[in-house]
Length: 413
View (cartoon, helix red, strand yellow):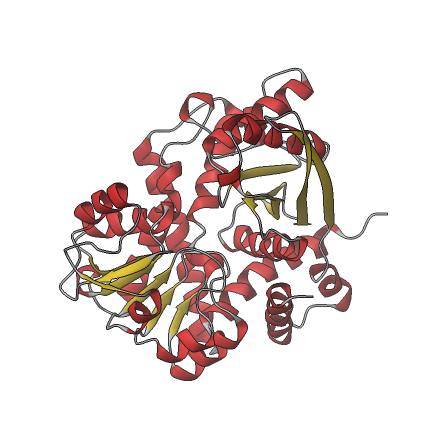
């Protein structure tokens, strides 16, 4: 078993020491409910047949239909998908939405596929997992290297299988086939709500905090823009190719234009170009890892200057790094809380699809902020009352709610 799911099991063990759940409940929490591995034959543009491997894991559905993204990446593994399905389970429970947790993935390199090959891959993958997904079963969403077009193909394929239109089978779709407003900025806007609550606990204004964001994709760039609009000071940004730093604050609109024109934030003339590792060590009050998992390892944690980490990515901190951060007294807002804005707005989209009635942008944003701020307060209160870290407190809230559902429902047969 690799370290990712091992880390999750260790964190679950830590939570169990605090919650003291009955063995019959705890044992169900450490095992995924359903794990599906599928082979995906795809006709390539040259007429050859290539077999891809795909996964879908439904970790727990005691609180409602499974919910979680689908990623396309050469390094996708069953262990990784299982890890993220567990995180989604606790995340949905933590923010109080009636979903369980799931995750899916296909082992492939999107850059090596034509648009037609990508469509055929997506439609065949949908067919292979089609018997376990659906609006009342499991509702996928975009993730790494998947987008609203991929979701539209999944929705169309599933609808053809059923013989009628089923927009609620996925979320993160294009607007004209049933997406919720603000979906693209959902995670970033959820992070802003968490920022505001975190700043309040520190008795500081948002504009006083120096922020470095590691990752400048949908989440990272969206967060930088949202903070900039609110007067926040983003002093550092990084992507896979490099980083840029300006202690006075970066010109975010200019940086976005630079990234669009060159493909990277490095070389932006409004700051000093650094490596990602160098940026992590620069002066900042808050660091937001907003890209891949495992970004903050032991070495990064030891060199980190920031006193607050807000996890905008899934599982960005290793178990070893967690221990270092704890010893240094770094305040960590964990991923299952900080990055939950995406699944909250996905829930809104699912509700609207079922009702065929769509809300205005302001209504979506206000409801998102309310849910995220309430979730932060729940976790922060437990953190203070029990004297545990924010990650443990968040897990206690999420795991505790799933455990309550399992206990209440009992065991069939």
